Image (cartoon, rainbow, N blue to C red; front, side):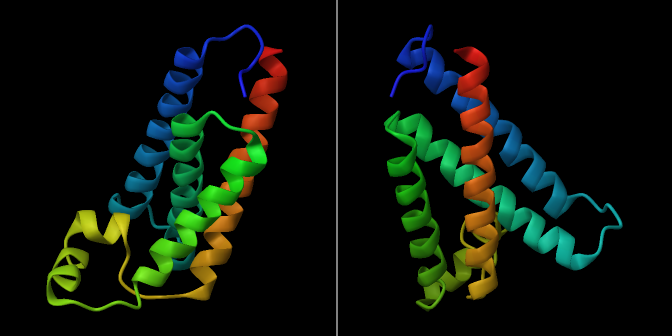
Length: 134
């Protein structure tokens, strides 16, 4: 769904730029020592990961928000469920920084709550941004 006054290409670049900021924030939260409690770092990163998934799905689809949210939740749940699969090559990848940031290592229902929170927050920011552009 196009925002009034913008082209699909501008929308995609705006969403990708916002998603890049989220990725940099999440990476910094996880990798830069901040002195924050471990729970804030872990679940804060998961919230930002959920927001990143929303941003990527939104940039790829430019669909109605409900469809974007539904697909982002499907992606997040799928990635979390993949953590239950153990293969030597997959476990080796999970031990790398990229593997930890993209897939994580341990299945947790709390991660799903954090992802949903991030997706909801990103959708809310998207709604407000659309209103400002209208």
